[in-house]
Length: 118
Image 1 (cartoon, rainbow, N blue to C red):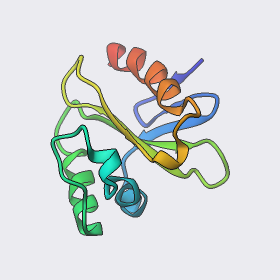
Image 2 (cartoon, one colour):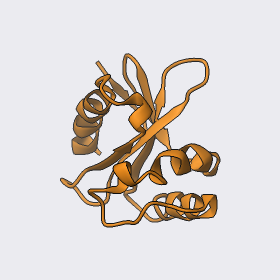
Image 3 (cartoon, rainbow, N blue to C red):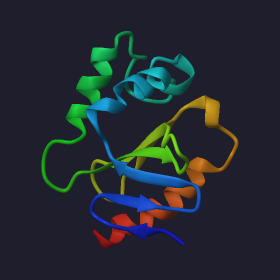
């Protein structure tokens, strides 16, 4: 069962929280990979400042529902991004390091009902 606040969504293994500028290094780590960006309209990032710009663009305006997906552990490692530019559209990107563990499914199952209530 997930809990939703304006700041975060918490599941059994994950914390979905607002994107922060400090997430840029982790986000660059997976958004620079062609395999992650393959099915998006963007080219892989080549410099960290591009991740900073990308994150900044996803925190501006009203009704912004974009989150960093973090492991619920002592490090709160950012493993992906999840958001909705306009309901019912949802997009996500995850680090392949954490693929195959059900994290995307867990995040989507928590995010979708919270988005419907927002």
